[in-house]
Picture 1 (cartoon, rainbow, N blue to C red):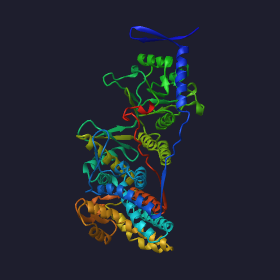
Picture 2 (picture 1 turned 135 degrees about the horizontal axis):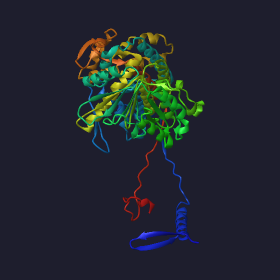
Picture 3 (picture 1 turned 180 degrees about the horizontal axis):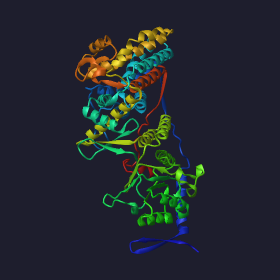
Picture 4 (picture 1 turned 90 degrees about the vertical axis):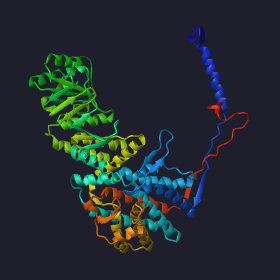
Length: 589
């Protein structure tokens, strides 16, 4: 019997049989096969350039990006406007964002531009700031190194010399590091990283003081014109109560549990038989209880609600936060914070066999419709500290920004607090610029807390020039010595650019700074020479080290380049015949 499909068209009903439909589709498929019977495989042509010419193109690309980025360096650095296909243009002062936005028309030069983008991106990923400094250093090393290669020096020996000198200089920076002491140093670091904006420095220092070393500080967009800070105490989860019948405070629509017991499991609880033995034991203790499970449905949920309404149990249930593998990590975090045993089949535990000793305890739990805050009683601090260290190791071994962000979030939840900075501005353009400044300042502050601080304003790099003579004596090969000297000369570039952006003669500032002791240098913000450590003009050691290492890595690789292979852009072909060439989908007709 033939199956028919009914199609309504206006007032007339048409019937199309399945056989006819298949026949029509078959003819269309046959036609398509005939059209595609002789597919042409088109290979993209490549352009190859060699020797001096290849390096020249790379240098041109590097200079194009560096020249656009370096005008933002220092407290008197200018802004760069980036065009956007959609929305208003972006006016920013952030080096890595500017570098990523540049794409050159010439493919050979664009390869050089992308190499410099790699320096900025890597420094941003590892240290979170210092991208403009690393860009300026890379440009200086490449321009000095190309001259040496052109004069006959061995590029590979130059590379080794730069690497040896870099290793010793990084070690010297770390040896001279000054520990970050208290809130004053944090405010100074944040202010410098935000381009001298003292308000940003004040807000970030307040946030870090409140949440502590293990806390997390995040940046969000605000609907108002002012910058605000919101603090969240304890472990905050983005899950609310499963049933509104668990609500105790009807006015605020929350369930607040004081000194509750906490059950943590990855199971979906639907049968009441699984939890009855456990609930009977808890009812005898007459203590509130929070159940964190994958889900609670059916008769199990009904039993909890009925007992709650009758006053037999002071109970509240929430779903486990996160998804997939992250869910397990979050549940384990909750279990460690509260001293509970993580109940899961993979560890050989079931709910019906759980004892009172395996249930955790918290000081206070507040559950809202879409959020839950667990405040620890502090009894399991040693286990929490070990867990934080474990998560830190996991985040250190990943390159995924998302994984790093989630890891820091988990550390903050365990550590006891999250500060949310809500950035406000009059226009979208100003908002984006302020948000980037806040992010740079927060990253710099974290880096400073981790490894300490060093004099800023390019003073640390100028001070390292004095060590170049000793480093040169430790190197035997002549070409390697030239490589070390190239790096020594490049260390002058940041302070020269800071002075230039401040409207001063760079060589005069550099000559005076060279004669100063460690810790002293030029403060471009007020055009004075002073003790930078005392006046708060400081940089994080981590940012300076990563900036120097990444710039040496890419720059030395550019010097060893002898051939450059790029894909030629495909030429646009003019449409032939009567076709207009501008109709959507015309090529398929």
